[in-house]
Image 1 (cartoon, one colour):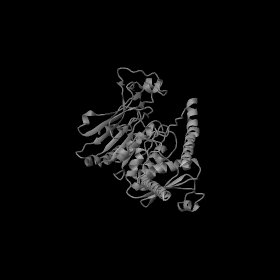
Image 2: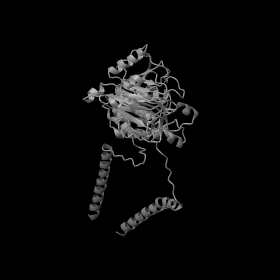
Image 3: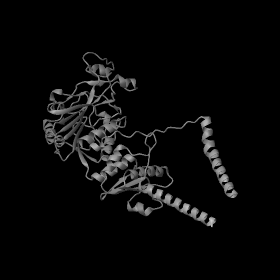
Image 4: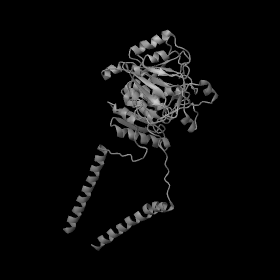
Length: 449
């Protein structure tokens, strides 16, 4: 009788134990918790990705076509897990196109390491499946119609249609990833109205005609957004236009000994000081320029416009007026030069009583250099992030102004000989031995009964 009760208790204990395991498994499936303890947040999405995902209102599918066993498979699996954990509206799947060719044919996938993002009755193809590119695709799925940028040409500006170092083809790819559509426009031939969210003038060398200036004024009077990149000694007739909105372009060049000390050139100013503005708030990345001119604000016009100087060079820098000395490489600071820090970028925004009124007012951002957005420089420091923040701000996309998540550093774990022995003996020898001894002890106690 006692043996029967004992067996019944054992069976009940086993059933209860199994029930607890099933309950815990179901609970973990319904309320999945995940903590990223890595220093560089290896298994977490960037802030910008999270902000994009929060805009989802319906389910989307992300399908990765990659060979099992390849390094890319593990990388995508990690990225997909982070997306699914962030939102229940994201469903992911990894497909080996060799094992399942019918699925690859359905989506017309012809190469490995391709990701399909589908939803909102739209589909995006990602050929280089990084987190940034997948998030860009999700953003395009959500927004649908792209925002339009008019890229002004006809005065020697930099073009995005050629992949030379001095041009801006990389910037074009970045902005397209942000769901902007770039169109080259000539002000004498093409009408520019508010169907264009932003107008960009990048490094003009020749003067704008009066008709073109009037066209720009007409666009701004409609509440348009303008970005101008001016080179030293080449204002292209835009100085008076910008001055009318409270932004002053200096007729000198910035010299920065700090850059020289960092191994650069004294005409390669480095900016690490930024204003408390939405574009640059908490911006902690250095931006690097080449042959820049000072940009400042006209404080007398603060009653008409909200004017902000955005980025400053080091205190050791100055605005040099002796151009002959610059060209000879014999520059020295004197009393005629403007002492640093020197401002290299500023924004003019129309005043308004409400946020809606302000959105209807013109906004102009002016940089004293165009080289920092070219193919040669845009990958340096925070150059890419600064121009991305600027464009997103003017395009009324404040949720996309972020500091880029840092590259994940590889940190090797260096162990002493004693630590190596601990790592080997404890998990390989000591722990298994303890478990074995406990098992033997339990067996002997049961035999003793």
